[in-house]
Structures are given as structure tokens and as C-alpha cells.
Length: 237
View 1 (cartoon, one colour):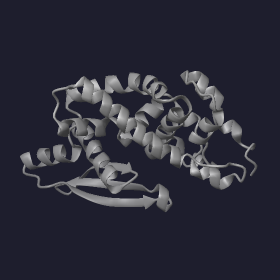
View 2 (cartoon, rainbow, N blue to C red):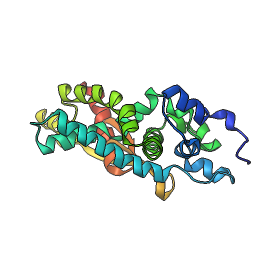
View 3 (cartoon, rainbow, N blue to C red):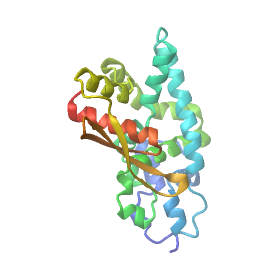
View 4 (cartoon, rainbow, N blue to C red):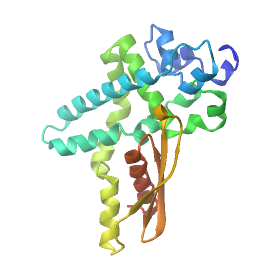
């Protein structure tokens, strides 16, 4: 299928940049950030997917968040800073940011991925957000990324600190279960889908034989953690 076909399924890159007020000079860079591998596989004219930009954006976010946390909380211990950073740049949080800016509407997905609900999938939204950050860093520099990211990040960081949401959800669930003499939570892999470079894992968590949560992630650790978070939500922990 020629790349020009089906393009009305996506918000145009220039429209996204204008809507978000992003100072992109190179719209081809932004277009690459929005191109999922599934689109590349279905369109011969597409040049590159967003995976390299995702890799870069992940590192840029880690640095920006670490820098902000270090200066915002000068008395906070290293271990707590690390947990807080992990909460702020984890799959769930970045996917939430992507939904907030309606990034899914602009992601260029293959027709099958699109029809299968890819625009709402946490792993795809998270990867797209990271790729967008990577592209903005290359095109406009770190100050532009800081101006874009920190207004979203800071309120969430304050919320996480006040609610102690940076605590490891699996540890919290285990503490809850053992305090009620229900034993240790058991995590079971439900499914693994996608190619080797873009896996999606789904895990269930059981407490005393009862399934309390389900989560998905790009690796087993994230999927099991998200299952614990799902259980916490249902238990109102």
C-alpha cells in the first residue's frame, strides 16, 4: 500500500506540532517519531520507524527527571529518588501523558495494529511519547524538551510524593497480603504477543488463590508490577 493511502487515519505531524506548541523545524523528524513499526511493515515508502528515537527519548527523560528531582528534593536519599524517578518515567505514567496530549491520534500505525486497538495500548503510547521526546531533543534541544515535559511531570511528582505512590507496588501488595495472613502474592504469565523487538507481556496476580489484578508491559517486570497496581486499585490501597 503506498504511504499516501490511509493517511487520513492519523493527525498530521504538522497539526500535532501546532496543537502542542512544539517548535519543530524538521517535520520529517517528527513524522519518524510517530511511525510505529507496524506502519513501516505495511508501507514500502516509509523510511524508518520510531524505535531509535524511543531509545533516545527514554534516556533524555531519565536525565531531565533525575536533574529536576535532585534539585527539587535536596535532602531525599538516593534510593527514594530512584524509586520516584521510576514512577515518573514508567510505562503507566508516560502512557498517561500520551493520552493527555492525545498522542494516539497522531501515531502512524499499521491497519491491523490500528484496528486491534493499538492507539490505546500502554506500551505503544509510552514508546510514542519517548520517541516524541527524542525527536524534539534532536530538533530543538534540551530546553525545548524541558519546557514540554516538566509542566506535565512536576504536578505528578508532587502527587506521587504526597501519596507515597513511588513505593514498589509489588512490595505494597505483599505487605497487605501478609498482614492478613493470606500468603505471598503469586504472579502468572498470561500471554506474550508481538515480535521479539516489541513484546507485550500480560500477567495476573493471585492472592490466596483469587485473581486480584492483571497488567501488561514491555517486559515481565513491568507487566507483573502493573498487575500489582491493578490489584491495589481494586483493593483501594
